Length: 415
Image (cartoon, rainbow, N blue to C red; front, side):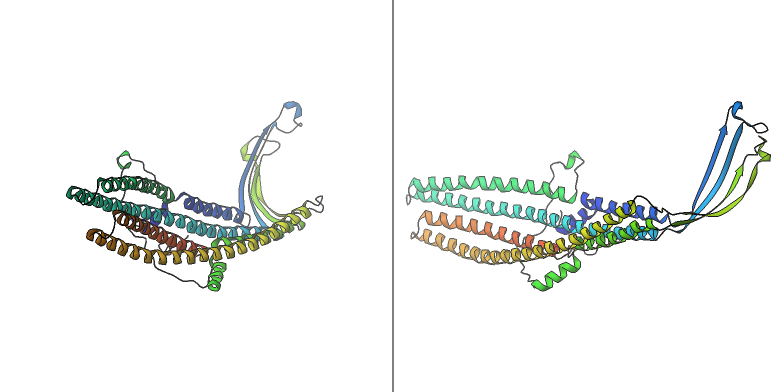
């Protein structure tokens, strides 16, 4: 047995797109650690050994040379580049979290849609089975009347034809359910690894109910601008691109490092380790690229262009979000109107069939009237199922367009 909540919970842990997005956050955290390393002391141990030919050895010196040095280096000033780089990585991590939220919203919308597909296929099977059952009853009724001599064999043949014509729709509905289940498995990330479960099908819990919900357009647009994670992610990217300008400009300025360490070097006149020279060293190192052929100017121009492109992407996505919200609300309104109309038609079709059966029993209606009423009822029930399905999908699409998390995933904390 599985319900929609269970499918969504499983997808949160096993959907491949969601897992990849979580890994991108971990990747970004690794980049933050890497950049932080530039701002804290770096300690290294260096050693060397050299042996040269006697012809190259200066008289009075040995033919070997070696040294060991333990060095610590601390960046004192980098023109603001290190701080800006760290800011970029922190902002990028926030953007990665927003990307995860967007992917979760998209993935769970797909899971909901696939689950609704399964429910729709299941209910369509029931409708077609009911239709076949009614046509069987109609065939038996026609046979009874034929044996009683009240109708001709033509009505029996027509009932048999209608029953045969109903079988393909039932077969198609059953196959549609099998396909829908496979697509749902793909959406939630389920892999069947055991042959024992290869042909097993879970029981799916839930119904395609129609529960009208209304949204205000202005409030919906405001909510989307505030909550859409994909739009917020682009704003973070733009902010990171702005910090990239500072990184590029830092090359105009000098760098200053504090350097200290302890060295052990070989005595030039003795190969004995005890004669080695050792001691502490401390100092500062500075570097300033006075002229680099305008390479820095080129990098600054690139950074400014990237920032402008990021700003334009935010504007483009903001417009796309607005159109998406309007379209989703329009589709929801259409689906709601169709669902309301379909509900009324089913009630009318059921009453029409009841009257047709009564009139046929009284001899005031033909078999064709009854068959047409049964076909109309089947079509009405099918239309109602599809209308309810469309409404539920449209409602889930609206919530995703507004940036709202899935109701069953609202408690999920993105770490």
